Length: 516
Image 1 (cartoon, rainbow, N blue to C red):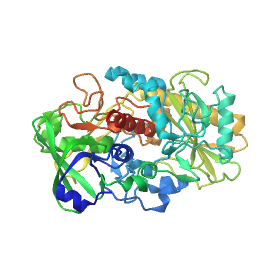
Image 2: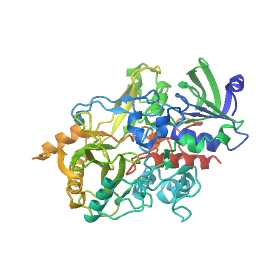
Image 3: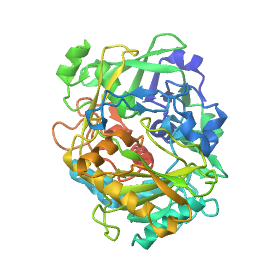
Image 4: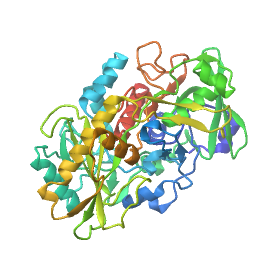
């Protein structure tokens, strides 16, 4: 790996990648495969060192530690005025070091929405399949559907699945939900243990998978940690350089191409600090508007989960041997036997998982059924409050502002309770603790508002599209500039049905292939 001392002396690169999270780490490995292309990866955090990161069962406890950005939202009218903490990784490997390790590609119709937005079939399920296969080391690989030998393991849990989760799966199947081999075949409606990015009982981060010792040893790759990009300096229709603040002191880096991989919050924030964004937002933040792009920072989306439909256990619940959230049942909102693109989800938590508004029972005495919707219509925004790195981000996800979202959430809660009261779970269920008696839609809405928590899937704030207001085009180039690209969750026009991590990796792999 090229030393920073040598890099600083040269003061330029062919490609600068801003953000060493899931997309950035993958791209650093892939784009540095060309030995004549000098690549600089800039990450605000440090290398991962906390041993708990690699313990799958420890993931909930990682939030709030020093490598978590630990953002706060604005108070949300749709969730009883609550402020939500948003965990985001500030570490090489990004949020792949913090999340629950679920690997779900999404449903084919999720990606058809991307095709419709861009007019480009590259973003379809069929044309993304080669990227997904390249990512994966799947136990059912080499069948044309899943990958084999890729950097990221996809674990299909078997013997280690909790007996509570097994009973949950049986309950779902008794209602008519198909039994699936995983969530990644293109059929998501059904019930199955969650596919996980785990190997030999350990979390595998994107840094573990792609930034191997061999990759880090490349002479043309520099990884600069503990450094943030303050702003992009523009010249005509190009980015001329990047102002960096870090241990090396303030410095400007010149580059031929810049790829933003800082995520759904920090990528639009960097654009706005650089004078690229909605004119009114920039004026309010005290930043001169150089390029008026009204959609930068808008279209913010996130999945919520109700936490939860809580049950006291008849007998001690064994600790999860995986990561607590062991099975997700996707379904249509109007019943358990429909097909197609899912609308709601119910998950089985092998722990008493509740929001901060409720008191959780002791571990081992209760379990939770989580519930949510797959494609929320509510749209929020992120904006900067000032021109400097330490000025806080104003995050307003506009949770549950859509009447359709609230109606679907009520159906998701009903589905969770239907599953939770089935005979297949009778051996574990002593009684329902939450929500208790609900006598009206208003009662349901109130409980949902108190119970929902983020599923940690923010996206959409630099959306791709063919319409004039879209931030990036189908090639992921910022429309106003020739040499700036955005490659992370912010470019997603709409959410995939489940966790978005697999889709983010496929976005990055697809972009890497376009640069080959």
